[in-house]
Image (cartoon, rainbow, N blue to C red; front, top):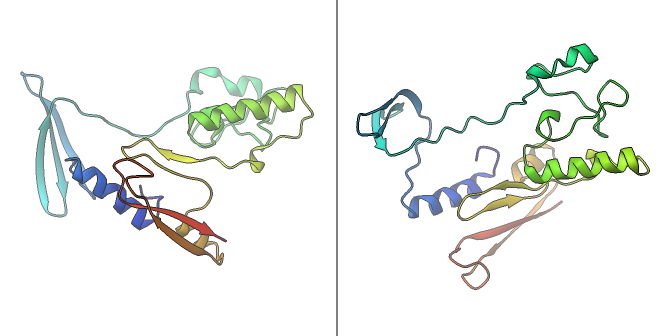
Length: 190
């Protein structure tokens, strides 16, 4: 949520809290253990001190890493980034003619719908007129929470940091338009 505008992040956090989800910010995990009865124990430190929680499961989400290590890309002369992503241009071509990379390994947005669009770009460039690129697309940023969160284009924070003159419009979302939601939709014009 750190990439979202503050009021958007707070609105979603409040929705999650109403559903009984506890959110701990600025926490550092110190220990994870499993008891003999199958419970998972978690010890962490926050600015308020050491805390412990137990539960039936623990989900660890650390992001995605490209699985390129075993491809022996240097043998083909294909360049990678320091993090292992395959370097591509906007047309998804690598530095080696005839070798392309799409999806998570190419370092683009880590969304299934972006990978599908990468396929379309590759298909059109290999079998079509060759004019498609990543630079002419807008990829929705999505967070599959309940309620779902998505946006296309710049956030307010990003637009302001780029010095764009913007106008923010907020419209209440009523239960008639989106069941269970009582928050706001946000649009920016710049």
